[in-house]
Image 1 (cartoon, rainbow, N blue to C red):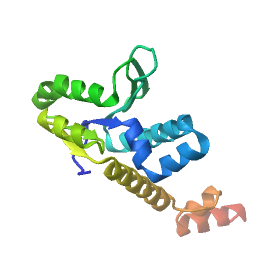
Image 2 (image 1 turned 30 degrees about the horizontal axis):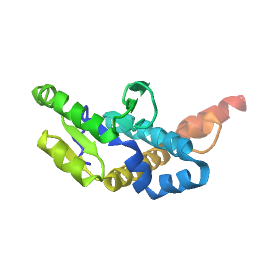
Image 3 (image 1 turned 180 degrees about the vertical axis):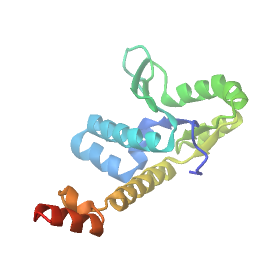
Length: 181
């Protein structure tokens, strides 16, 4: 994704991501759908915070007799479970239709991550940008590696002693003080 994503609204088709992203697909097959959902949410918490996105992860509750539920995970990530009879695709398309003018007036981007071809065409018609679920998974992994590199280079010393992080001249002076000089 380009660097100018701050405050972009990103809709993610959750089950589409789980089905496309090999790591999550393996997690789903090995540990169940709930664990795959948790890992996707955790990945999106970090990704959305790092990039300053307004990420909205949408899961189908199509066959469950429940109302639409919104969970605010962080200030950058919300999770939506659709209501009975509504697909994630429909929810995302309606949201794009509702938000397009508001976001355009605020000069905010609207992006949808899915690999569903029909949905791609629909959301493009609403002025949203599209990215594949595989591209989003690649971007998330790349961002994670970038954060790790920044974290590693930010560490100056692996020693737990404060004196070791001082300049050599200060260390020398401290040693003299300890010896009574």
